[in-house]
Amino acid sequence: MTAALDSVSPIDVAAVRKDFPLLTRSMQGKPLVYLDSAATSQKPNIVLRTLDEYYRFHNANVHRGVYQLAEEATEAYESARTVLAAFLGAAPEETIFVRNATEGINLVANAWGRANLAAGDAILLTEMEHHSNLVPWQIVAKASGAELRYAGLREDGSLDLESVERQLSGGRVRLVATTYISNVLGSIVPVERVAMLAHAAGALYLVDAAQAAPHAAIDVRRLGADFLVLTGHKMLGPMGIGVLYGRKEILEEMPPFLGGGEMIRKVRLQQSSWNDLPWKFEAGTPSVGDAVALAAAVGYLQNLGMDQIAAHDTMLAEYAQTALAGLRGLTVIGPRQRGALVAFAVDGIHPHDLASVLDEQGIAVRAGHHCAQPLHDRLGLAATTRASFYIYNDEADVDRLVAGIDLAQQVLGG
Amino acid sequence: MSTLYTEIIQDAYRNPRLRGHLDDPSHTYEDENPLCGDTLHIELRVEGGHVVDARFEGRGCAISQASAELLLDRITGESTESIAGLDREDVLEELGIPSISPARLKCALLALKVVKGALYGLDRPANRGTASAPGPLD
Image 1 (cartoon, rainbow over the protein chains, first blue to last red):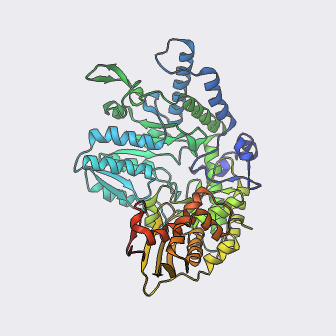
Image 2: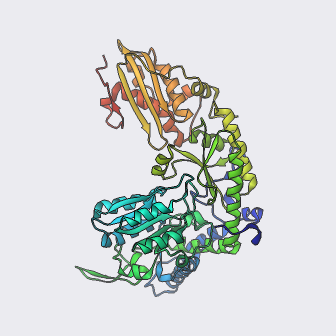
Image 3: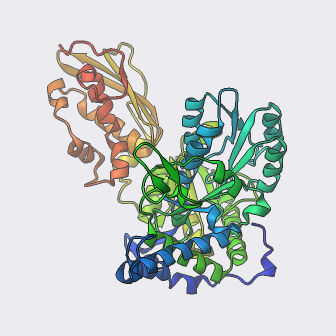
Protein backbone atom coordinates (compact mmCIF):
# COMPACT_ATOMS: atom_id res chain seq x y z
CA MET A 1 0.00 0.00 0.00
CA THR A 2 2.94 2.27 0.42
CA ALA A 3 4.76 2.02 -2.89
CA ALA A 4 6.98 5.06 -3.20
CA LEU A 5 5.62 7.63 -5.61
CA ASP A 6 8.87 8.10 -7.47
CA SER A 7 9.34 4.40 -8.17
CA VAL A 8 6.30 4.03 -10.39
CA SER A 9 4.77 5.97 -13.25
CA PRO A 10 1.57 7.82 -12.41
CA ILE A 11 -1.83 6.84 -13.73
CA ASP A 12 -2.94 8.77 -16.80
CA VAL A 13 -6.32 9.71 -15.35
CA ALA A 14 -7.58 11.45 -18.50
CA ALA A 15 -6.93 8.28 -20.51
CA VAL A 16 -8.49 6.07 -17.84
CA ARG A 17 -11.64 8.21 -17.71
CA LYS A 18 -12.23 7.62 -21.42
CA ASP A 19 -12.73 3.93 -20.59
CA PHE A 20 -15.61 4.65 -18.19
CA PRO A 21 -18.78 5.68 -20.04
CA LEU A 22 -20.72 6.50 -16.87
CA LEU A 23 -18.22 9.19 -15.93
CA THR A 24 -19.31 11.27 -18.94
CA ARG A 25 -22.71 11.85 -17.33
CA SER A 26 -23.59 15.18 -15.84
CA MET A 27 -25.63 15.64 -12.70
CA GLN A 28 -27.83 18.67 -12.17
CA GLY A 29 -26.15 20.14 -15.22
CA LYS A 30 -22.68 19.77 -13.74
CA PRO A 31 -20.00 17.19 -14.59
CA LEU A 32 -20.25 14.19 -12.29
CA VAL A 33 -17.55 13.92 -9.63
CA TYR A 34 -17.80 10.34 -8.44
CA LEU A 35 -16.26 9.96 -5.00
CA ASP A 36 -17.99 6.82 -3.80
CA SER A 37 -15.84 4.01 -5.16
CA ALA A 38 -15.50 2.49 -1.69
CA ALA A 39 -19.21 1.70 -2.02
CA THR A 40 -18.93 0.55 -5.60
CA SER A 41 -16.60 1.38 -8.46
CA GLN A 42 -17.66 2.38 -11.95
CA LYS A 43 -17.09 -0.10 -14.79
CA PRO A 44 -14.76 0.25 -17.78
CA ASN A 45 -15.82 -0.61 -21.32
CA ILE A 46 -13.82 -3.83 -21.33
CA VAL A 47 -15.87 -5.18 -18.41
CA LEU A 48 -19.18 -4.12 -19.97
CA ARG A 49 -18.14 -5.59 -23.32
CA THR A 50 -16.97 -8.86 -21.77
CA LEU A 51 -20.25 -9.28 -19.93
CA ASP A 52 -22.20 -8.51 -23.08
CA GLU A 53 -20.12 -10.83 -25.27
CA TYR A 54 -20.39 -13.68 -22.81
CA TYR A 55 -24.18 -13.63 -23.00
CA ARG A 56 -24.23 -12.70 -26.69
CA PHE A 57 -21.90 -15.43 -27.95
CA HIS A 58 -20.88 -17.98 -25.30
CA ASN A 59 -23.75 -18.44 -22.87
CA ALA A 60 -24.56 -21.97 -21.72
CA ASN A 61 -24.66 -23.64 -18.34
CA VAL A 62 -21.25 -24.67 -17.14
CA HIS A 63 -19.86 -28.15 -16.40
CA ARG A 64 -21.25 -31.47 -17.59
CA GLY A 65 -22.44 -30.07 -20.92
CA VAL A 66 -20.97 -32.04 -23.82
CA TYR A 67 -21.79 -29.58 -26.58
CA GLN A 68 -19.40 -26.89 -27.71
CA LEU A 69 -21.17 -23.90 -26.16
CA ALA A 70 -21.22 -25.53 -22.72
CA GLU A 71 -17.53 -26.24 -23.10
CA GLU A 72 -16.87 -22.62 -24.05
CA ALA A 73 -18.79 -21.36 -21.04
CA THR A 74 -17.01 -23.79 -18.72
CA GLU A 75 -13.65 -22.81 -20.16
CA ALA A 76 -14.46 -19.11 -19.73
CA TYR A 77 -15.61 -19.63 -16.14
CA GLU A 78 -12.63 -21.74 -15.09
CA SER A 79 -10.23 -19.37 -16.86
CA ALA A 80 -11.74 -16.54 -14.83
CA ARG A 81 -11.08 -18.56 -11.70
CA THR A 82 -7.45 -18.99 -12.74
CA VAL A 83 -7.13 -15.21 -13.24
CA LEU A 84 -8.57 -14.49 -9.79
CA ALA A 85 -6.42 -17.19 -8.19
CA ALA A 86 -3.29 -15.69 -9.71
CA PHE A 87 -4.42 -12.22 -8.59
CA LEU A 88 -4.45 -13.50 -5.01
CA GLY A 89 -1.43 -15.79 -5.21
CA ALA A 90 -3.71 -18.76 -4.57
CA ALA A 91 -4.41 -22.05 -6.32
CA PRO A 92 -7.61 -22.27 -8.43
CA GLU A 93 -8.99 -24.98 -6.12
CA GLU A 94 -8.66 -22.50 -3.25
CA THR A 95 -10.53 -19.79 -5.16
CA ILE A 96 -14.28 -19.97 -4.65
CA PHE A 97 -16.68 -17.71 -6.52
CA VAL A 98 -19.32 -16.19 -4.28
CA ARG A 99 -21.74 -13.28 -4.71
CA ASN A 100 -19.72 -10.80 -2.70
CA ALA A 101 -17.44 -10.48 0.32
CA THR A 102 -20.44 -10.76 2.62
CA GLU A 103 -21.36 -14.15 1.20
CA GLY A 104 -17.75 -15.29 1.49
CA ILE A 105 -17.69 -14.45 5.20
CA ASN A 106 -21.07 -16.09 5.72
CA LEU A 107 -19.74 -19.19 3.99
CA VAL A 108 -16.85 -19.43 6.45
CA ALA A 109 -18.99 -18.53 9.46
CA ASN A 110 -21.50 -21.22 8.59
CA ALA A 111 -19.43 -24.03 7.09
CA TRP A 112 -16.29 -23.66 9.21
CA GLY A 113 -18.05 -22.20 12.23
CA ARG A 114 -20.70 -24.89 12.52
CA ALA A 115 -18.08 -27.62 12.41
CA ASN A 116 -15.46 -25.99 14.64
CA LEU A 117 -17.02 -23.67 17.19
CA ALA A 118 -18.47 -24.67 20.54
CA ALA A 119 -19.30 -23.06 23.86
CA GLY A 120 -16.10 -21.78 25.44
CA ASP A 121 -14.51 -20.94 22.09
CA ALA A 122 -13.97 -17.35 21.02
CA ILE A 123 -13.92 -15.38 17.76
CA LEU A 124 -11.79 -12.24 17.76
CA LEU A 125 -12.90 -9.26 15.65
CA THR A 126 -12.04 -5.56 15.79
CA GLU A 127 -14.10 -2.52 16.69
CA MET A 128 -13.93 -1.18 13.14
CA GLU A 129 -15.49 -4.05 11.22
CA HIS A 130 -18.07 -3.56 8.49
CA HIS A 131 -21.37 -5.21 9.39
CA SER A 132 -20.48 -7.94 6.89
CA ASN A 133 -17.62 -9.06 9.14
CA LEU A 134 -19.66 -8.66 12.30
CA VAL A 135 -23.20 -9.93 11.91
CA PRO A 136 -22.32 -13.38 10.47
CA TRP A 137 -20.12 -13.98 13.53
CA GLN A 138 -22.84 -12.80 15.89
CA ILE A 139 -25.19 -15.34 14.32
CA VAL A 140 -22.70 -18.22 14.48
CA ALA A 141 -21.65 -17.24 18.01
CA LYS A 142 -25.24 -17.38 19.17
CA ALA A 143 -25.81 -20.74 17.51
CA SER A 144 -22.59 -22.32 18.82
CA GLY A 145 -22.30 -20.67 22.21
CA ALA A 146 -18.94 -19.19 21.21
CA GLU A 147 -17.93 -15.80 22.56
CA LEU A 148 -17.21 -12.68 20.49
CA ARG A 149 -14.20 -10.62 21.48
CA TYR A 150 -13.09 -7.29 20.06
CA ALA A 151 -9.64 -5.84 19.61
CA GLY A 152 -9.62 -2.10 20.24
CA LEU A 153 -8.29 0.85 18.30
CA ARG A 154 -5.65 3.42 19.10
CA GLU A 155 -6.61 7.04 19.55
CA ASP A 156 -5.90 7.76 15.86
CA GLY A 157 -8.14 4.95 14.65
CA SER A 158 -5.46 2.43 13.78
CA LEU A 159 -5.68 -1.12 15.10
CA ASP A 160 -4.21 -1.57 18.58
CA LEU A 161 -1.99 -4.63 18.18
CA GLU A 162 -1.46 -4.84 21.93
CA SER A 163 -5.20 -5.22 22.27
CA VAL A 164 -5.10 -8.03 19.71
CA GLU A 165 -2.41 -9.75 21.80
CA ARG A 166 -4.35 -9.23 25.03
CA GLN A 167 -7.52 -10.69 23.57
CA LEU A 168 -5.60 -13.65 22.15
CA SER A 169 -3.83 -14.29 25.45
CA GLY A 170 -7.24 -14.94 27.02
CA GLY A 171 -7.09 -18.28 25.21
CA ARG A 172 -9.68 -20.29 23.22
CA VAL A 173 -9.69 -17.92 20.23
CA ARG A 174 -10.35 -20.22 17.27
CA LEU A 175 -10.56 -17.57 14.58
CA VAL A 176 -9.48 -13.97 14.11
CA ALA A 177 -11.36 -11.96 11.45
CA THR A 178 -10.34 -8.40 10.58
CA THR A 179 -10.68 -5.94 7.79
CA TYR A 180 -7.57 -5.17 5.72
CA ILE A 181 -8.54 -1.53 5.24
CA SER A 182 -11.33 0.06 7.29
CA ASN A 183 -14.12 1.40 5.06
CA VAL A 184 -14.60 4.35 7.44
CA LEU A 185 -11.28 5.12 9.10
CA GLY A 186 -9.14 4.11 6.16
CA SER A 187 -6.85 2.40 8.67
CA ILE A 188 -4.57 -0.19 7.12
CA VAL A 189 -4.38 -3.27 9.31
CA PRO A 190 -0.91 -4.86 9.45
CA VAL A 191 -2.37 -8.18 8.38
CA GLU A 192 0.96 -10.06 8.26
CA ARG A 193 1.51 -9.16 11.89
CA VAL A 194 -2.04 -10.11 12.91
CA ALA A 195 -1.67 -13.41 11.04
CA MET A 196 1.47 -14.22 13.03
CA LEU A 197 -0.23 -13.36 16.31
CA ALA A 198 -3.33 -15.39 15.40
CA HIS A 199 -1.34 -18.41 14.33
CA ALA A 200 0.89 -18.26 17.41
CA ALA A 201 -2.30 -18.44 19.46
CA GLY A 202 -3.56 -21.41 17.45
CA ALA A 203 -6.26 -19.44 15.66
CA LEU A 204 -7.11 -19.17 11.99
CA TYR A 205 -7.18 -15.76 10.33
CA LEU A 206 -9.77 -14.35 7.93
CA VAL A 207 -8.99 -11.12 6.08
CA ASP A 208 -11.80 -8.94 4.70
CA ALA A 209 -10.02 -7.42 1.70
CA ALA A 210 -13.08 -5.73 0.19
CA GLN A 211 -11.45 -2.28 0.50
CA ALA A 212 -7.89 -3.45 -0.17
CA ALA A 213 -8.11 -5.67 -3.25
CA PRO A 214 -9.16 -2.80 -5.57
CA HIS A 215 -6.08 -0.78 -4.63
CA ALA A 216 -3.06 -3.02 -4.17
CA ALA A 217 -1.52 -6.34 -5.03
CA ILE A 218 -2.50 -9.12 -2.64
CA ASP A 219 -0.61 -12.34 -1.94
CA VAL A 220 -2.52 -14.56 0.44
CA ARG A 221 0.54 -16.65 1.33
CA ARG A 222 2.73 -13.64 2.08
CA LEU A 223 -0.07 -12.17 4.20
CA GLY A 224 -0.54 -15.45 6.04
CA ALA A 225 -4.30 -15.43 5.52
CA ASP A 226 -6.22 -18.66 6.03
CA PHE A 227 -9.30 -17.07 4.47
CA LEU A 228 -9.61 -13.87 2.45
CA VAL A 229 -12.64 -12.32 0.79
CA LEU A 230 -13.04 -9.68 -1.88
CA THR A 231 -15.98 -8.32 -3.83
CA GLY A 232 -15.81 -7.73 -7.57
CA HIS A 233 -17.96 -4.62 -7.86
CA LYS A 234 -15.54 -2.49 -5.84
CA MET A 235 -12.72 -3.36 -8.27
CA LEU A 236 -14.34 -2.51 -11.62
CA GLY A 237 -16.24 -5.81 -11.88
CA PRO A 238 -19.98 -6.36 -11.98
CA MET A 239 -22.15 -6.54 -8.89
CA GLY A 240 -22.95 -10.07 -7.77
CA ILE A 241 -19.52 -11.69 -7.98
CA GLY A 242 -16.81 -12.01 -5.38
CA VAL A 243 -14.15 -14.42 -4.25
CA LEU A 244 -13.45 -16.40 -1.12
CA TYR A 245 -9.91 -17.69 -0.81
CA GLY A 246 -9.48 -20.54 1.66
CA ARG A 247 -6.35 -22.51 2.42
CA LYS A 248 -6.74 -25.91 0.78
CA GLU A 249 -6.23 -28.06 3.90
CA ILE A 250 -8.92 -26.11 5.73
CA LEU A 251 -11.41 -26.12 2.86
CA GLU A 252 -11.01 -29.89 2.48
CA GLU A 253 -12.02 -30.46 6.09
CA MET A 254 -14.96 -28.06 5.96
CA PRO A 255 -18.51 -29.25 5.35
CA PRO A 256 -20.38 -27.52 2.50
CA PHE A 257 -22.23 -24.24 2.96
CA LEU A 258 -25.14 -24.39 0.51
CA GLY A 259 -26.40 -27.70 -0.86
CA GLY A 260 -27.63 -28.30 -4.40
CA GLY A 261 -26.38 -28.99 -7.86
CA GLU A 262 -22.72 -28.67 -8.81
CA MET A 263 -21.42 -29.11 -5.25
CA ILE A 264 -22.14 -32.87 -5.17
CA ARG A 265 -20.33 -35.97 -6.36
CA LYS A 266 -23.13 -38.51 -5.86
CA VAL A 267 -26.66 -37.95 -4.65
CA ARG A 268 -28.77 -40.71 -3.13
CA LEU A 269 -32.18 -40.32 -1.57
CA GLN A 270 -30.83 -40.33 1.98
CA GLN A 271 -27.34 -38.87 1.57
CA SER A 272 -24.84 -37.34 -0.81
CA SER A 273 -21.10 -36.98 -1.19
CA TRP A 274 -19.36 -33.76 -2.09
CA ASN A 275 -17.58 -32.55 -5.16
CA ASP A 276 -13.89 -31.64 -5.18
CA LEU A 277 -12.63 -28.16 -4.37
CA PRO A 278 -13.56 -25.51 -5.25
CA TRP A 279 -16.92 -26.72 -6.60
CA LYS A 280 -17.89 -28.23 -3.21
CA PHE A 281 -18.65 -24.65 -2.16
CA GLU A 282 -20.38 -23.52 -5.36
CA ALA A 283 -23.92 -24.88 -5.19
CA GLY A 284 -26.23 -24.08 -8.07
CA THR A 285 -25.57 -22.32 -11.36
CA PRO A 286 -22.80 -19.81 -10.76
CA SER A 287 -22.74 -16.24 -12.03
CA VAL A 288 -20.63 -17.14 -15.05
CA GLY A 289 -20.90 -13.90 -16.98
CA ASP A 290 -20.04 -11.89 -13.88
CA ALA A 291 -17.04 -14.10 -13.12
CA VAL A 292 -15.74 -13.69 -16.67
CA ALA A 293 -16.27 -9.93 -16.51
CA LEU A 294 -14.49 -9.77 -13.14
CA ALA A 295 -11.50 -11.46 -14.73
CA ALA A 296 -11.58 -8.73 -17.39
CA ALA A 297 -11.62 -6.14 -14.60
CA VAL A 298 -8.57 -7.75 -13.01
CA GLY A 299 -6.87 -7.69 -16.40
CA TYR A 300 -7.62 -3.98 -16.71
CA LEU A 301 -6.22 -3.29 -13.24
CA GLN A 302 -3.11 -5.37 -13.83
CA ASN A 303 -2.56 -3.63 -17.14
CA LEU A 304 -2.44 -0.31 -15.26
CA GLY A 305 -0.29 -1.99 -12.63
CA MET A 306 -1.35 -2.64 -9.05
CA ASP A 307 1.66 -0.75 -7.69
CA GLN A 308 0.82 2.27 -9.85
CA ILE A 309 -2.79 2.10 -8.67
CA ALA A 310 -1.70 1.88 -5.04
CA ALA A 311 0.58 4.90 -5.47
CA HIS A 312 -2.10 6.94 -7.27
CA ASP A 313 -4.87 6.16 -4.78
CA THR A 314 -2.62 6.75 -1.77
CA MET A 315 -1.49 10.07 -3.24
CA LEU A 316 -5.12 11.18 -3.75
CA ALA A 317 -6.11 10.19 -0.21
CA GLU A 318 -3.18 12.20 1.14
CA TYR A 319 -4.03 15.17 -1.05
CA ALA A 320 -7.65 15.03 0.10
CA GLN A 321 -6.71 14.64 3.73
CA THR A 322 -4.50 17.70 3.59
CA ALA A 323 -7.04 19.79 1.66
CA LEU A 324 -9.94 18.83 3.95
CA ALA A 325 -7.98 19.33 7.15
CA GLY A 326 -7.50 22.94 6.02
CA LEU A 327 -11.25 23.66 6.17
CA ARG A 328 -12.54 25.28 9.33
CA GLY A 329 -14.79 23.09 11.46
CA LEU A 330 -13.89 19.93 9.59
CA THR A 331 -12.47 16.89 11.36
CA VAL A 332 -10.94 14.04 9.38
CA ILE A 333 -11.61 10.64 10.99
CA GLY A 334 -8.86 8.04 11.08
CA PRO A 335 -5.09 7.79 10.95
CA ARG A 336 -2.75 9.76 8.72
CA GLN A 337 -1.60 6.66 6.84
CA ARG A 338 -4.70 5.40 5.11
CA GLY A 339 -6.34 3.66 2.20
CA ALA A 340 -8.05 5.50 -0.63
CA LEU A 341 -10.82 7.12 1.39
CA VAL A 342 -11.39 9.98 3.79
CA ALA A 343 -14.33 10.16 6.19
CA PHE A 344 -14.97 13.39 8.02
CA ALA A 345 -17.35 15.37 10.17
CA VAL A 346 -18.22 19.06 9.67
CA ASP A 347 -19.28 21.08 12.71
CA GLY A 348 -22.97 21.97 12.65
CA ILE A 349 -23.75 20.20 9.39
CA HIS A 350 -25.37 16.78 9.33
CA PRO A 351 -23.70 14.42 6.84
CA HIS A 352 -26.97 13.93 4.95
CA ASP A 353 -27.35 17.67 4.46
CA LEU A 354 -23.75 17.92 3.35
CA ALA A 355 -24.20 15.05 0.88
CA SER A 356 -27.40 16.65 -0.46
CA VAL A 357 -25.71 20.01 -1.05
CA LEU A 358 -22.77 18.24 -2.71
CA ASP A 359 -25.20 16.25 -4.86
CA GLU A 360 -26.59 19.55 -6.12
CA GLN A 361 -23.05 20.30 -7.27
CA GLY A 362 -22.79 16.94 -9.08
CA ILE A 363 -20.54 15.47 -6.39
CA ALA A 364 -21.34 11.94 -5.22
CA VAL A 365 -20.17 11.11 -1.70
CA ARG A 366 -21.59 8.75 0.88
CA ALA A 367 -23.13 9.90 4.13
CA GLY A 368 -24.18 7.64 6.96
CA HIS A 369 -22.67 4.99 9.17
CA HIS A 370 -21.18 3.13 6.17
CA CYS A 371 -22.35 -0.23 7.56
CA ALA A 372 -20.17 0.28 10.63
CA GLN A 373 -22.58 1.30 13.39
CA PRO A 374 -20.50 0.00 16.33
CA LEU A 375 -17.54 2.03 15.09
CA HIS A 376 -19.66 5.19 14.83
CA ASP A 377 -21.01 4.55 18.33
CA ARG A 378 -17.42 4.38 19.53
CA LEU A 379 -16.56 7.60 17.68
CA GLY A 380 -19.64 9.24 19.21
CA LEU A 381 -20.97 10.13 15.76
CA ALA A 382 -24.32 9.08 14.29
CA ALA A 383 -22.91 9.40 10.81
CA THR A 384 -19.97 10.69 8.81
CA THR A 385 -19.41 11.84 5.25
CA ARG A 386 -16.99 9.78 3.18
CA ALA A 387 -15.16 10.57 -0.04
CA SER A 388 -13.34 7.67 -1.67
CA PHE A 389 -11.00 7.63 -4.61
CA TYR A 390 -9.99 5.39 -7.46
CA ILE A 391 -8.06 5.30 -10.69
CA TYR A 392 -10.43 7.70 -12.49
CA ASN A 393 -10.21 10.44 -9.85
CA ASP A 394 -7.69 13.24 -9.72
CA GLU A 395 -6.82 16.31 -7.65
CA ALA A 396 -9.41 18.39 -9.52
CA ASP A 397 -12.13 16.10 -8.13
CA VAL A 398 -10.84 16.74 -4.61
CA ASP A 399 -10.77 20.49 -5.31
CA ARG A 400 -14.43 20.37 -6.38
CA LEU A 401 -15.25 18.50 -3.18
CA VAL A 402 -13.54 21.15 -1.10
CA ALA A 403 -15.41 23.92 -2.95
CA GLY A 404 -18.67 22.00 -2.44
CA ILE A 405 -18.10 21.71 1.31
CA ASP A 406 -17.35 25.42 1.42
CA LEU A 407 -20.70 26.10 -0.26
CA ALA A 408 -22.49 23.77 2.17
CA GLN A 409 -20.99 25.73 5.04
CA GLN A 410 -22.39 28.92 3.54
CA VAL A 411 -25.85 27.38 3.10
CA LEU A 412 -26.09 25.48 6.35
CA GLY A 413 -23.34 26.70 8.63
CA GLY A 414 -24.32 28.32 11.90
CA MET B 1 -27.24 28.31 -4.46
CA SER B 2 -29.28 25.37 -3.27
CA THR B 3 -32.73 24.41 -4.52
CA LEU B 4 -33.29 21.91 -1.71
CA TYR B 5 -32.21 24.11 1.16
CA THR B 6 -34.69 26.92 0.63
CA GLU B 7 -34.65 30.10 2.69
CA ILE B 8 -37.61 28.64 4.59
CA ILE B 9 -35.66 25.53 5.57
CA GLN B 10 -32.49 27.45 6.37
CA ASP B 11 -34.38 29.87 8.59
CA ALA B 12 -36.40 27.17 10.37
CA TYR B 13 -33.21 25.16 10.95
CA ARG B 14 -31.09 28.05 12.17
CA ASN B 15 -33.69 30.01 14.12
CA PRO B 16 -36.23 27.56 15.53
CA ARG B 17 -38.89 29.23 17.64
CA LEU B 18 -40.54 26.04 18.88
CA ARG B 19 -37.48 24.20 20.13
CA GLY B 20 -37.87 23.51 23.85
CA HIS B 21 -40.34 22.06 26.29
CA LEU B 22 -43.92 22.73 27.46
CA ASP B 23 -44.70 23.06 31.18
CA ASP B 24 -47.70 20.79 30.95
CA PRO B 25 -47.90 18.76 27.74
CA SER B 26 -50.92 16.52 27.22
CA HIS B 27 -49.18 14.43 24.59
CA THR B 28 -45.52 13.58 24.09
CA TYR B 29 -43.93 11.23 21.61
CA GLU B 30 -40.53 10.53 20.14
CA ASP B 31 -39.07 8.51 17.32
CA GLU B 32 -35.99 8.31 15.18
CA ASN B 33 -34.68 7.46 11.75
CA PRO B 34 -32.30 4.68 12.69
CA LEU B 35 -30.47 4.93 9.38
CA CYS B 36 -29.80 8.66 9.66
CA GLY B 37 -29.61 9.03 13.40
CA ASP B 38 -32.25 11.77 13.29
CA THR B 39 -34.11 11.91 16.61
CA LEU B 40 -37.23 13.90 17.39
CA HIS B 41 -39.19 14.42 20.62
CA ILE B 42 -42.35 16.50 20.56
CA GLU B 43 -44.70 17.83 23.23
CA LEU B 44 -48.25 18.96 22.49
CA ARG B 45 -50.90 20.68 24.56
CA VAL B 46 -54.33 19.65 23.28
CA GLU B 47 -57.39 21.47 24.60
CA GLY B 48 -60.92 21.16 23.31
CA GLY B 49 -59.81 19.04 20.38
CA HIS B 50 -57.27 21.59 19.22
CA VAL B 51 -53.50 21.79 19.54
CA VAL B 52 -52.92 24.97 21.50
CA ASP B 53 -49.15 24.73 21.97
CA ALA B 54 -46.27 22.61 20.71
CA ARG B 55 -42.52 22.22 21.23
CA PHE B 56 -39.82 19.88 19.98
CA GLU B 57 -36.33 18.71 20.83
CA GLY B 58 -34.17 16.68 18.52
CA ARG B 59 -30.93 16.10 16.72
CA GLY B 60 -30.42 15.44 13.10
CA CYS B 61 -30.26 16.86 9.64
CA ALA B 62 -31.60 20.25 8.61
CA ILE B 63 -34.50 18.66 6.75
CA SER B 64 -35.78 16.69 9.76
CA GLN B 65 -35.33 19.53 12.25
CA ALA B 66 -36.73 22.24 9.97
CA SER B 67 -39.74 20.11 9.15
CA ALA B 68 -40.40 19.70 12.90
CA GLU B 69 -40.32 23.48 13.36
CA LEU B 70 -42.52 24.15 10.36
CA LEU B 71 -45.01 21.37 11.03
CA LEU B 72 -45.50 22.29 14.69
CA ASP B 73 -46.06 25.89 13.68
CA ARG B 74 -48.60 24.73 11.10
CA ILE B 75 -50.62 22.53 13.50
CA THR B 76 -50.75 24.97 16.38
CA GLY B 77 -54.38 26.07 16.55
CA GLU B 78 -55.59 23.26 14.34
CA SER B 79 -58.05 20.53 15.30
CA THR B 80 -56.79 17.01 15.80
CA GLU B 81 -59.14 15.85 13.02
CA SER B 82 -57.56 18.15 10.48
CA ILE B 83 -54.07 17.09 11.62
CA ALA B 84 -55.04 13.47 10.96
CA GLY B 85 -55.47 14.41 7.32
CA LEU B 86 -51.99 15.87 6.86
CA ASP B 87 -49.76 13.99 4.46
CA ARG B 88 -46.49 14.14 2.58
CA GLU B 89 -47.64 16.90 0.24
CA ASP B 90 -48.50 19.12 3.20
CA VAL B 91 -45.04 18.63 4.69
CA LEU B 92 -43.29 19.41 1.39
CA GLU B 93 -45.49 22.48 1.03
CA GLU B 94 -44.42 23.67 4.48
CA LEU B 95 -40.78 23.07 3.54
CA GLY B 96 -41.30 25.04 0.34
CA ILE B 97 -39.95 22.36 -1.97
CA PRO B 98 -41.83 20.59 -4.79
CA SER B 99 -40.14 17.24 -4.28
CA ILE B 100 -37.35 15.48 -2.42
CA SER B 101 -35.28 12.37 -3.08
CA PRO B 102 -36.57 9.11 -1.58
CA ALA B 103 -33.54 8.95 0.71
CA ARG B 104 -34.35 12.33 2.23
CA LEU B 105 -38.12 11.89 2.33
CA LYS B 106 -37.87 9.95 5.60
CA CYS B 107 -36.07 12.92 7.14
CA ALA B 108 -38.81 15.25 5.94
CA LEU B 109 -41.62 13.01 7.20
CA LEU B 110 -40.19 12.20 10.64
CA ALA B 111 -41.97 15.16 12.24
CA LEU B 112 -45.36 14.17 10.80
CA LYS B 113 -44.81 10.61 11.98
CA VAL B 114 -44.03 11.81 15.49
CA VAL B 115 -46.98 14.23 15.60
CA LYS B 116 -49.35 11.46 14.53
CA GLY B 117 -47.67 9.12 16.99
CA ALA B 118 -48.38 11.59 19.77
CA LEU B 119 -52.02 12.09 18.84
CA TYR B 120 -52.90 8.60 17.67
CA GLY B 121 -50.01 6.50 18.99
CA LEU B 122 -51.99 3.50 20.12
CA ASP B 123 -53.94 3.36 16.87
CA ARG B 124 -50.80 3.11 14.80
CA PRO B 125 -49.00 -0.09 15.77
CA ALA B 126 -46.60 0.36 12.85
CA ASN B 127 -44.98 3.25 14.72
CA ARG B 128 -41.75 2.21 16.31
CA GLY B 129 -41.73 4.85 19.00
CA THR B 130 -43.43 4.80 22.37
CA ALA B 131 -46.23 7.12 23.35
CA SER B 132 -45.90 8.26 26.92
CA ALA B 133 -49.27 9.98 26.99
CA PRO B 134 -51.52 8.55 24.31
CA GLY B 135 -54.52 9.90 26.27
CA PRO B 136 -58.06 10.28 25.02
CA LEU B 137 -58.36 12.65 22.10
CA ASP B 138 -61.24 14.59 23.67
